[in-house]
Image 1 (cartoon, rainbow, N blue to C red):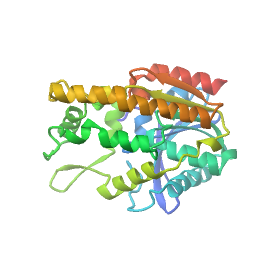
Image 2: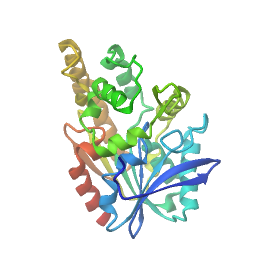
Image 3: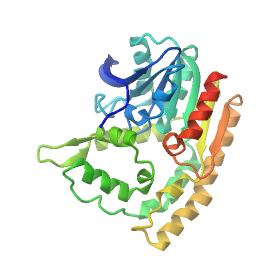
Length: 309
């Protein structure tokens, strides 16, 4: 049940309809952008905590949630133009952008194209170079490529059953299963005529987004606005299941986290520091990729300090 005190609305831009949430407030616009597979509702808990001093909003990109799901337009230029036209349509001249995960693409590219429109940038475990060789090697060597979670080959006919199966298969989601995550998840599924629950996002769109992420060449060196970047370390440890994984599988994941994953995160931190030397960086030991949920108080306090500087 959606309990967050927001207005829900749509805007037609760039040939499609985009969904957004508006929590109101005065001052500069603080706009949240979700990661791949998520929508504006993922910020139902965090966003309204800032509307005492900012006008807080969240946008759902194409292919997600209540926004249109065209089969094309998932390249970096089109995704960023969606955001650009959204700002124009709502007459937002300058904006503070806070983006999770995949939103690195829109934050960085918009900053490169329209630096005068960006007041500040907040990267929520987002400032990563997924075009790097080290990233591709990390993905290729991941033990998860050899592990088949249970329950993914079964049809489900109620949201509760479907989400229970997903939380069991992917323990990292069970750790952060708040009302906000439950609400946002309802907007990422649909029920077929026979009652079966499926993801709204097609395989074609999912692959297109993955290709954009892995093909995007960083433009962080063009960032001029004040920037804050959170990096969650050892986040892969959250993916371990004590229920259905073998000892060997758990050990393989932990070894991967300590060797490949943390090394890539450290490499990403150093690269971001070089490219954006004026940025403030917050490292979260034993962090969660959804740090704004699992480590909400830390993230909230650091964002608030950054925005009030």
